[in-house]
Length: 421
Ligand SMILES: [Zn+2]
Image (cartoon, rainbow, N blue to C red; front, side, top):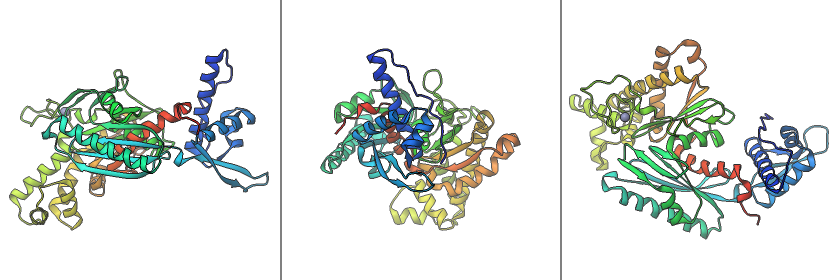
């Protein structure tokens, strides 16, 4: 068993308020240990926290009463008395997650261990306008709540992952360049409609929290989550914490300039030369279109005709899977452009991992080899050798799982907000 940390244990209450704060802090510390390291016994929790066994037992009893933790049997390994093992109670509560993409809306219900038990994803057209897309999202969320209520779920909250910069305190989307939305009071809109405590975060930040709680970055202190889709965003997880910067807007890696040139098409943010314009979803579609204009040896036009569908990443992936060179080469070109940006991240942050997720990760098998090929050409060898570049455990659902993770993270920090039952 790998025991880590317990940084937040408190032992010296002064008054009632301090006692309540102490109790919540210690409940949170124990709950986080169980979430990260289950199956785990009370005795192991006592060792990890430094608290005495009776205090740990009392804290565990309360977590069981709140249905956040349950017992899962005995560990009879070793020579001592068998110990009862604990883990998070997946049915202690459910969470509604909403990922608002630029061209899709995805809603899911997850249990308290972060596993999706229901999901619905719909294409969306940002050209229809903000009101229409928000109505579509609200409709899906209300459907999810109705389905959950029929099953008797206790909802612990709702999480929303959105592209763009977010004011966490106010729950407002400040600016999403790829949607052209500004100052949208998401928390107010969704908490009024659902009556649930609603949390909002940037899509890449949320995904980074999800990877750290449930995915490829458990026990990883320094990693960067790269969301790749219509835009490219980053969640910077440094020294064991999400790095948000002075105003909370850190991680807008897609808008870092590779080489600005006045002849380039501007990015949706209004600037030229942004990294994401070389490596995002649209850049791949443009590459395929350019190839199809001069080459005819591709199955893509036939696939489009058969499906009566416009060119899309899913269709290009389908072509690449069937051995279409134009499709595979377009992904590889975009992968090399991604790799240049990744190399910058490796040089600056010296991360343990860079995790690629979001809609473009469905083409990960074509993008990753190109990314791996390019990074060593632009990094110092000592740094490059330490950085692992991998696909998200949740692929295109990384930010949806992230939306769920920000609610779970809040419950892990404030377990007493969940009622006993
Ligand atoms: Zn930009």
